[in-house]
Image 1 (cartoon, one colour):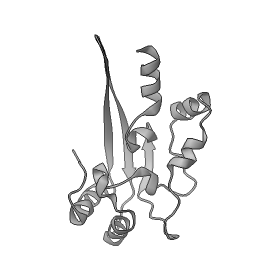
Image 2: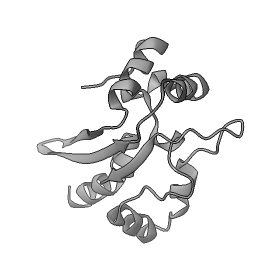
Image 3: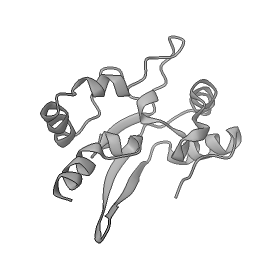
Image 4: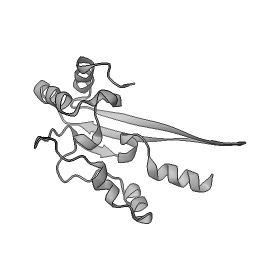
Length: 143
């Protein structure tokens, strides 16, 4: 389990551990109201490219990921032109007329520097960002 890093060195250690590996991001959600409860989770596999120590240090220094579990924000480090959303997320965004959320969720390159650390996302991009919107929406409709 990787929480938010305590400091710069902790962030560097976390990213070093994730470098060149696939990890699972799990988000659990519970909906509660009066006598109703609906708990579910979403799981997404994220594969990191193999990173040099310099790339890791630069990422930490530029993007300051101390407020992010695992010391990274998917929106900060995707390959250029990469659409990270699953087919289910794309269909959901089309259904609610918010396909612009994909581009709005991906940060512009800071200072002209791009540090790509993610090679692949299998599952929900919004889950990796913190909340699987499409699943929450479906569960709320049925709640």
